[in-house]
Image 1 (cartoon, rainbow, N blue to C red):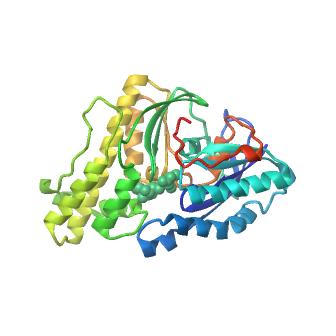
Image 2 (cartoon, protein in one colour):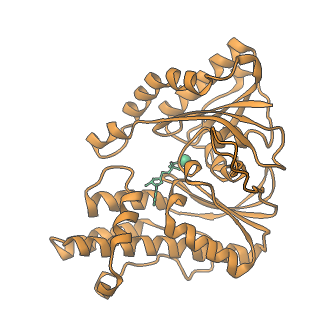
Image 3 (cartoon, rainbow, N blue to C red):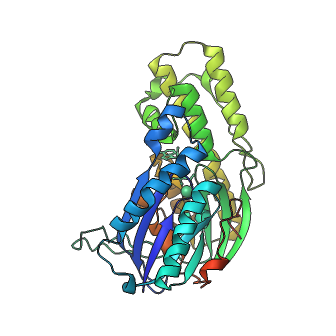
Length: 353
Ligand code: KG4
Ligand code: ZN
């Protein structure tokens, strides 16, 4: 069956078509289109929700047309749409578009949780690159029980997945998400607009470790605590204080602080996921969300897999950031077929809802 996915929870507008009827084999992506309003946010230094939603209203139809270019409505069996969490104005653009299509085409809607869908990016067929059929690398799906880690701009959650739809929340950030910490620190340290995570990674990579100076050490909040909860707001404040104290910073000093920040965030995430594995002995570790594009985090997570003999699943870079392919993929696990008029956006949806 072919499922149309629509994603508009934050500043991206995504449309995808996937093929599949079960999650016991990797899901094939037939089309995927993402439009971002990042350019617009550069002027304001961050996302202004009304600006993001207005832009999404402008691009929703063109993105939809492009995503559906090779398909007729008869081929689509259901419409999967992100209903939350996210910015209400943005969510409404996707949800109302899905409802209009469902009504016009007489198709069911499958409501999808955006945060959970980041983990389902690991059920996407890795051997299948769009418009490329020759690459037949073996692709497998995660086995349960699995530990799931979502690290994005708005969420940092650890869950136990006993099966599809059998989720237990284990812990997460008590304040800022890891991505938010990257973004806010990037703005102060490097003067870059949202999203700043990739800029921190780039600066950190250029840092020459011979220049390490312990005066620039940042805290690893809650790292030794026997809890799966985390906190990143104190780390952000520590970086703000450090940059203020040091005054005008050279390029290398900025790189050192960026490196420290990345190490601090990755070390905390690695420690918490390790603790979850020690407690629950999963077969797989699945991670997802924009921050999992970070190479240092990807390496850290692979190390955990080796240490605990757990299979690690990390999405391809294309599926780490917000996209509609993961939304349509997540829809395959429990097609809650609902009539369109019962679908509502919910900005505060939790990962386990
Ligand atoms: O999942 P996502 O696209 O949107 C949300 O659902 O929030 O994640 C966006 C987040 C931003 O905070 C961005 O700075 C972060 O992912 N990010 C990174 C990297 N690439 C994106 N953080 C660290 N290193 C990266 N390479
Ligand atoms: Zn996301």
